Length: 223
Length: 244
Ligand SMILES: Nc1ncnc2c1ncn2[C@@H]1O[C@H](COP(=O)(O)OP(=O)(O)OP(=O)(O)O)[C@@H](O)[C@H]1O
Ligand SMILES: [Mg+2]
Figure 1: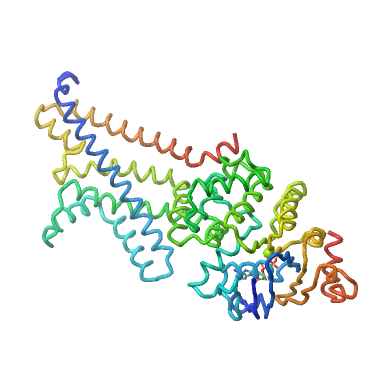
Figure 2 (figure 1 turned 30 degrees about the vertical axis):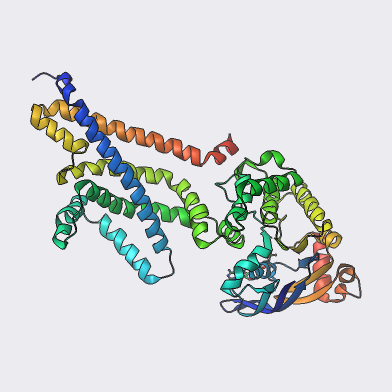
């Protein structure tokens, strides 16, 4: 056989829509993971031992079960209970829950690293607990955990390829369809390799820029 | 009035404040002296509600800091300046100062910012409003810390060793601002090791010894040989500070 990428030209639009779906699922799941991660991080630092235990079980459970099993559980298991959600939503929910288990660790580390004096200052100024968390604690924790959260996101992009197993035509799913139509797996998967590499590279670049932006005060202090 | 009545505070088994009584009237400047570990910071932290009392009562303009429903009102009436500044690192100077006025007092943002800029100007930092704490010197950070407390227009300003993390030059710049505030009639409760400065600006000086408030005298009486100095612990403390 000879290598000929041009035969994929008619399918590029289809693949691009798959890439869009991957990006959309991952972006939503990132938000979901940070929300889940923050909630779990709060629960893990909470005074209630029940909450702490639930959070601990959550983190342990979802980190020690293969993602594909979690995904099948949500997609094929929940309908048995009368809960029907579409493939895209299922994918986002599953990725958010799995990602949240990882994100909670880095967010928790970020929270624990905050100087208690800063929280004291916020408290005596009369800010409510919720305001202190959303305006002071979370932003400071996030700025120290941008990089580790970036790794969570990159892992999520890689893991999202598994969503193709529940009929979601994201990047990998679309590629499989194109293979079945063209019988050119080599070309298709070369493109797929490059697409994932480009996607994750862009993300790490964005993470670096975001980290620099959030910590701009320190950069300028040094520079 | 800020009233501390028979306050006891213990950390597990160790009693740190033992029956402390103290009253501060509007307009007064009261300095708290005492050796390290005597409970000065703990007293400040009890007044602003960061520590829970084991016994006794603290009221700020009749609002009891031990009652959850009154604590918010009590806190609106006092402002705290910390030894290590405790500025919010992710916010600009202006945001540090306007956060609480906007969120707690519900001051409209433009007004809060105008007040903040005026305060910054009064401490010589008009051009640093958009800087971040990490970009400021220690003395500048503490001046921002003072502005942040003042922006809430507190009736009582609580200051806990606000210059002890600063070198002499920066200490001087911060003390100059405090002297100005004192002259303007700001009510202050001032924990310090700067004895000479305390003597200059205070109406009264109180002395804490192992959690007990053993002396509470007008400034000139505190330093008189037959006044505060008559107390061996005070005499000892003052002579030790002299040497340093
Ligand atoms: N959170 C805490 N837990 C246990 N012990 C504490 C706590 N905070 C203060 N202490 C103890 O209470 C005592 C009084 O401390 P405090 O910080 O009030 O003293 P201070 O007069 O401010 O001293 P310094 O001049 O060194 O600042 C000390 O023995 C200290 O170890
Ligand atoms: Mg102290």
